[in-house]
Length: 405
Image 1 (cartoon, rainbow, N blue to C red):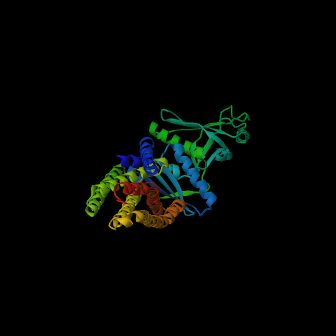
Image 2 (image 1 turned 90 degrees about the vertical axis):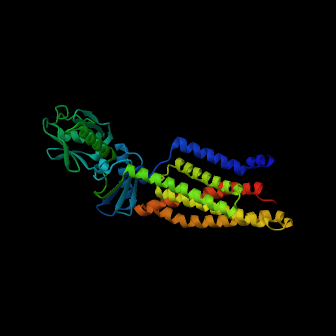
Image 3 (image 1 turned 120 degrees about the vertical axis):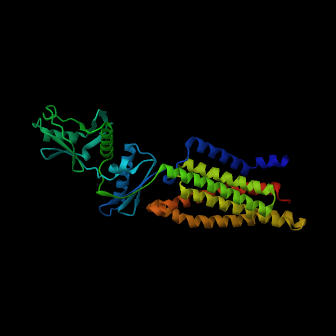
């Protein structure tokens, strides 16, 4: 009993317990973000008309991200791929629902008798769209200078059509009223239209609101590729990943038991592996990392590395316990240091191998490497959790309940 009390009071064990509880709380309250291959969704590849510099590319990705957020899409990733391509990842949304949003430059113009009265640059804010039957309207506010420019062009032209173009396509053409044709500036403008059904009207209004609110892209774009994963296939992936994880745990447990034939060694190794899984998922919940198949593979790799490290620690201690009793006491700390030297060296090597892959995937955004960066990132998290939390806790267990020094 004294051994157990001392063991539970050790700072390494307290740290382990705190992180497990915190991770469970994070998973429960924050949830785990699932990637496209688990939840279902789409990957849209966009090609720019010409190569652009880093600043222009940042504007492109920022506008697209803002459009999708304005449209109401959640769980999105917009990243550059080189200097002429953009990858848009959207979880839980069909590609045809957002194709018009991400594939249009968003150039907005208002013309009266072919004379430009307003442009998208004059827009200050966009108000929520409104639907009445099959008719829609999107009100927005323009700057004072834009209102004055419109008033000058509109003066004396009551009854003349006000043509509103989005990417050179006429979307609305209301007649100019007497109030706007008297030369008095007004900052309030409305784009109106009608569709065949209420659903079409809402879709059109939502598209126009998103484009007007986000602004125009600095270059023309073209959608060159769309791939999607259905939610049903995502459920199959989740089931397969769960089965693979359970089978891996069973196989590892069997191998460890056959090696040591002692439950007091097998159970802590399994418990530590489960603790690492919980903590990795907890950290992913806190930092909003998407867990996809690549990330799951990284988790399995990290846990496998953890089991290997625990076997190294156990073997070093048991090997020392076979020596003469007079030499065991002096040699325990030396053996433990030797074991941790191997553990740290192995961890450093693995992290060094994973860092370039993670960096290239995050910074460049290429589709294949971006996926592998999830594998690298979760592997690194798992290794760091191991060397700073679970390995020291397991070593303390070995010291208290296994070593005979």
